[in-house]
Length: 187
Image (cartoon, rainbow, N blue to C red):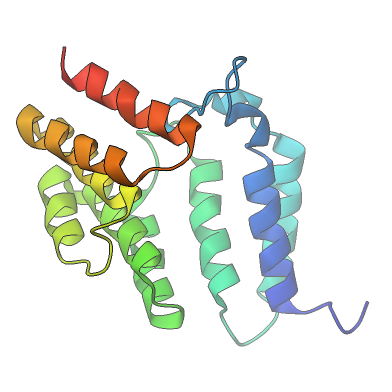
């Protein structure tokens, strides 16, 4: 429809298609969460990814860049990466920097810090996370800290961060993910 055939609409459709392409790999056979790092990318829906790129291409027809454009760009870097390790984290970090200008929020800052940590190493991630205000009572912030401490080899700090995350998590499936991280870290 002419009223909805807008660049921003196509950017949103691209974003939805990119995320929908991964739906079948986000849970295992028992219904447990599978983190992005461990998802079987060969099972990602390539038709939806192709449709996402078509909508993303159509979204470039305008002058304005919306938050949807930037979020779709971030999702596209995940979709094109052959593996988690081969993800272009520098490009994702750059997109999050732009997103912070368009739609600043603590969650965007959190994701930007995580991208920086994967791009430049755990120390950079920890430093960026420590600068975010308003996330002290959010389990994802503590979990991200724990992950970077774990990658840095600081198990006591990782365990402390994961324990703090357990205080704020509410969904049982997410609680299990954090508990699994604690169990792994305790080995």
